[in-house]
Amino acid sequence: MEIQFKNTVIEAVQGDITRETTDVIVNAANSSLLGGGGVDGAIHRAGGPEILEECQKIRARQGGCATGEAVITTAGRLPARYVVHTVGPVWNGGSNGEDNLLHNCYLNSLALANDHGATSISFPNISTGIYGYPKSQAADVAIQAIKEYVQLSGKGHMQRIRFVCYDAENLALYEQKLEQAFQQS
Ligand code: ADP
Image (cartoon, rainbow, N blue to C red; front, side, top):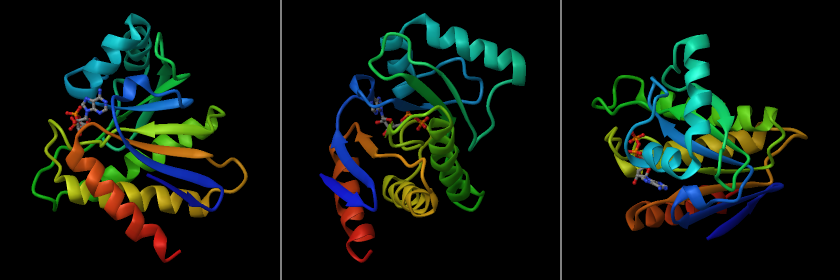
């Protein structure tokens, strides 16, 4: 599905984020930046060793990446131009700042992509795999964050923001929640 909000097209699709042709794809990384399972593993496998080499340099410089923050690297062999690596929160009951940290992941990724001249970006469903975040709540946070970003961003806006859902359950949630979030605006 596709929604137009101000000057931005917001989409939800089901698929593999490594195939995305947007300027930026976002990786749900861990704070070590050394790769892992899930979408992180898929991105490093498909993108080749250049991505990990840059992650290692960032790690040497700043000691990894804190939860809610984001860093950017080449996309190696992937069709995208850059990979933004953001570290989602591990779900720990919900009263440990999880929503705020997840919100920061989306906003910091968008800001970093924009700083690098990107006009299109694809997000996975950050934290909803190994990190155990309830999918419905994570979708609410993600949609609220991008809505806030599009409302507040001035000239250097994203033309296209894609939620690339790996599973049908997430796609159904995004379709329903995007409709709800944007129909009144
Ligand atoms: P986290 O540790 O942040 O939970 P995961 O990689 O385990 O990260 O999961 C995040 C989301 O990414 C999950 O919804 C998972 O189904 C999804 N995912 C896994 N592989 C891919 C892929 N190739 N493309 C897009 N999404 C993926």
